[in-house]
Length: 381
Image (cartoon, rainbow, N blue to C red; front, top):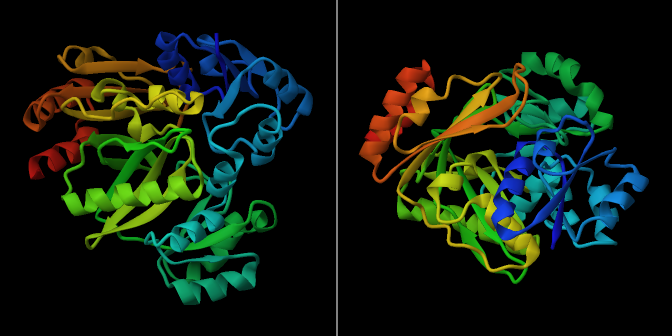
């Protein structure tokens, strides 16, 4: 029986383990904390990702390794790759971990991207602001996610405050200045590439964020064929350049009819959670198929789907579960401000039926504000 090792024991690893059970797979999860929620469904090895003794124990017990979040040290992935197969490869992981490297790659591949500049010191920030313009966003090059490690600069008078907030990190994780994009819509393409180079995408997804954290996702996004094809082409170009194996997401902004790349997530992705019930093959199963060298499953949608993300604490499940296409996911985490603790997916055969179910669920949950933008998007389609 094949054992898959997962670096990182959060909800993504948990859902991978659940998806792998029908395939007869075993799992070993490595995480730095003993209460990682994936440990409720798979054996858990607690250790530091940079501890070679812990990595050696991990490697000795698995046949192939992957990861469930992008902040696993690339050096650790490289150490493992010298001993066991690791997918996605460490180069892809390292690229996605550095916003400067990532956006440079986008530009090399001809993927439109907001203007950006490296900011190694305080003087460079003034130079970068003069070139990029304001408003703009100062970000850490590494380790930022869900809106963390960012400072929005509205005018040149905010430069000192931005540096006070993030400047200390210039010498450690590095800083990058990015032009602010007054986007009209946020979209993502979730894709998978197998060991043999086979490439597939799920339908384009539209996303809404609150305070930098995903709040809702709708699939398929209401877009024209040209935009859909462009998004899929950008994802394919990245996958082929990086020799990528597994699932990834390319996050995009839509502005004046043009798609601008925001970032690459080298893992299964929050905006693809709807695929569990809403697609022929979920992102989690296809990720496992890819890293094991198995044929990829069909990514065809089963109607229309909306995913609602639960942050901080779980609402009562009844309003979702009473809907015919309602599905509930509790990650087994204790409540905490800003923490992703679960999600729900509503699926229907057509957009009108999804809108009706979503409106009822939103009212029952007391989350009308959360579902409102999704209902608006469905109405415009």
